[in-house]
Image (cartoon, rainbow, N blue to C red; front, side, top):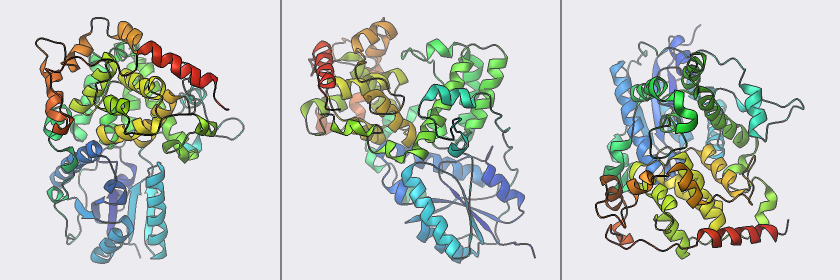
Length: 473
């Protein structure tokens, strides 16, 4: 006898209908599908900006489902407990979801799968967050890759499955379980007044993500190789925000990039490499989960980084008033837009971990709180790459000079002027918006004098190199 009981589909960072293997399989079964989103133990500890942005994504996805004659059931609590309650209420015989790979999500999912299987429920996970499952990419010796370039060479010629069409409709159950109201969760509460400042910069939902990809491929991918390094121009895809919440699939981005490459658009190859850098981050996190919390190169635990966040220079770094304009511009861009240009991320990370000699975890955790495109694997890899403690890292003795970086990538100062108000007689709206976003307790004003460097470029470099040369490992 065929099973006609409902399938609960548990959505997490896969807030889309198109190119969704698990959902496609659920619809194909012919059984009723009950879409569910849980404000669970993992969501509960998510930082202010990404939790707020996740809430926007959940709201948009609920509307998308409603247009298909379905709905998104919302529950708050521990994942296993809430799913068990939903199974009991609905008579569902299956709970399915798309796989995630960071340690917190994996531990939660393992608990859920074991508990539901003990209950006799078909608990099943599907691909969809990545193009290449981490365990399917191996060296000739059967090991995982620790360096990006060989990883890229191993996957660049692989066949990537074509994207799947969105289902035209989702079979509904005879009756729906009760649902929380999204507004009652107050997912943006920790953003305080900053939410209103950041909101104009977000791009929420599957349709918006698809349009963003199409616009990038049509107008900017050809120049991506060079333009992506210039923070004052719209040279990047900005798709990290949508990939983070699964509003677009990596396969959709990959195939768009491949088509662009075949059309002779020069920057498409670089775009594909960046997509694979994201894959590489999850490849490493899967095989070495410590990447998200501890030094990947364990010997770096002996390095004399400062871990005291109360120090004045750490506070200055967080507030974008280090006195180094490129660093401050990037930190302020993040507060106003919820994102930061990739060149800026490298500069601020190098300055914190090398010039200021602070532990990379301080920066990683600040980004976790401030970025709307926060991604657990990419954030951790980026910070350890910059600090020198990670796989395929920039060596510690390679210290980014923010002044020469500014001369090279912001020659006319357009980026710095856009985000740093102090010292300008008529600052632009972007720079002034920073003071509307930050906590009033910071006591900052655009009329403040330009801050003196908390640590000079030359002084910081010499201190970092001295510490590196005299390390105990």
